[in-house]
Image 1 (cartoon, rainbow, N blue to C red):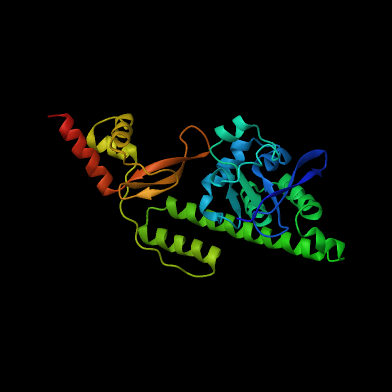
Image 2: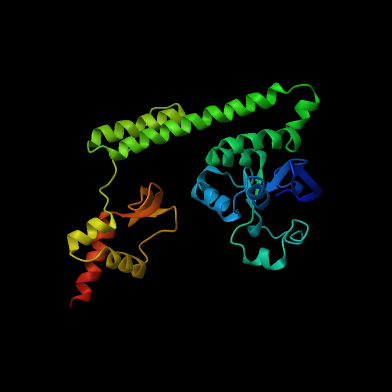
Amino acid sequence: MNNLRVIGTEHIGKVEFTGIEGGFGKNKKAMLVKDIAQIHSKEVKAINQAINMNRSRFREGIDLVDLKQVNQIDLFSELGFTRAQWGNANHIYLLSERGYAKLLKILDDDKAWDIYDQLVDNYFNMRVAIKNNEPSLVQQRRLSIMEENSATRKANMLYKLAMATTSESSKQALIAKSAEVLTGEMTVPVMKKKEYSAGKIAKELNISGKKVGMIANKLGLKAEQPGQNEYGRWANSKSKYSDKEVPQWFYTEKGLQAIKKEISLDRR
């Protein structure tokens, strides 16, 4: 990673933040999540959560760097952190312009787009284009991101339709169409193995859903979010109590058998 350099205090409207160069190439600007959160009037943990839930979309060293994983910690005070804040944080993300643009697609609100214009015009490298009387480059970049965001929303809609249908063939066709919207290629996915929610396992084994979760935790069946393993995978499902989607662990056949075996041992 290129050496970081604090270049001073920058301004977006009335908000002050730390100007940073390095990390993603010589003279390339970067931004801390804590400053992005302040500019967007959001909590740091909300921005970190948005990144963590979409971590596979961000390329390490190109879109973001987790400064907690870097040995160069002597700058923590210059970056606006106390020693305690630095030590207690799980992640301290630094985003490039490209990484910020990806985050913007996740946030996707009118205020985010207005702020994007200001940051591009006045902070990131594209301000050079404006000084050279090439403001159209900024608009082209914004339109490109908006088109990508529209494709992402369409793909998500197709995927949700796929998950709602009871026809396996229709489900796979919709998933393939979703992949085509995102990648331009019609990818026929491998048929998904049968999966079980905790509720289904509880009903089948005549135990409570809480008991299923306790056994899974005891045996260490669940992967770290948002991963998967031979016993199951994490996926977002609609909450019973609101319109929000929440992470839920779905068990494979091997996961089901592991819980069955543990119950049979307990009953001996």
